[in-house]
Length: 182
Image (cartoon, rainbow, N blue to C red; front, side, top):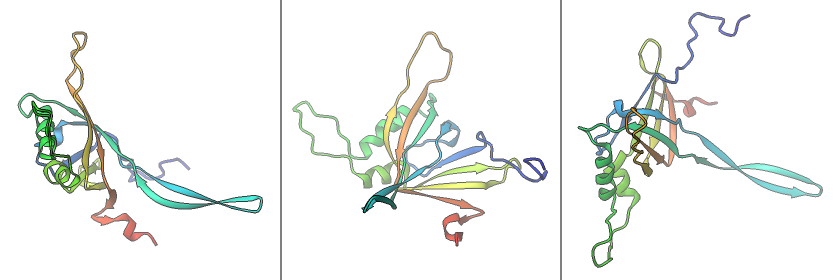
């Protein structure tokens, strides 16, 4: 018996995806070059009884993801990130060194990526979402690196960002997979 025993089995392809930013930054799905899929970790608590140690699962923590974007001239992503940071509450120090504003999660989510961000996996037939859909809830930008210039390369200027989020849901066929677990 072969590994792919049916002609109808189709593996997910790493290059068949797009990202929906529910944002005010003006980021477009075609700017995304790479994106990490969500991941989680379950903590553990040890309990010692006599000469034995037992482990119990604890809380679930969702890991941050990395995104690499191409920085176009006409829809300047670097400018959009700086404006988004300011909309999130950041203010550079004034000439007298005082600033009263702080970055808040509510402002970073509302004025940044929005309350949801989607990573859509496309099938070979092109049906969006059929390969799976990740929804990241309350995403906010934790880190941005604006790339580097080099006279030795002809590549495109890339930005990388790290996104933190509260939790993710995986949907298949429009249904939350966690709801169908029995």
